[in-house]
Length: 116
Image (cartoon, rainbow, N blue to C red; front, side):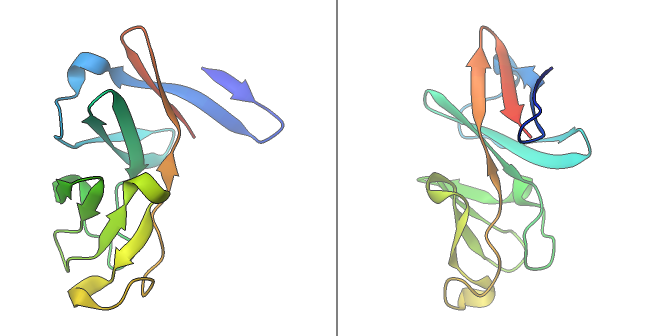
């Protein structure tokens, strides 16, 4: 595990790249954080597991074109734009709930690492 003490960040090995299937979310608990990792083409995206509305499990949500939809009330978050809320729960306007956090990732050999 590598550390950046200036910003108190850690680069943590989470899984092997072979543990992830294309466009299929997988939940992990890493250093006290619940994350979802999803492989989309050549990149891996990591983000908070729980919806900011009522803690719906985003690992069970639908994924389409970089957008994750909460299975509980339909809030949508854009993973390509820092987890920005693009549709509120029950089809309310965007921004009615907080954004989710998206974490930087890297693939090093066969390992997937996340900065947390």
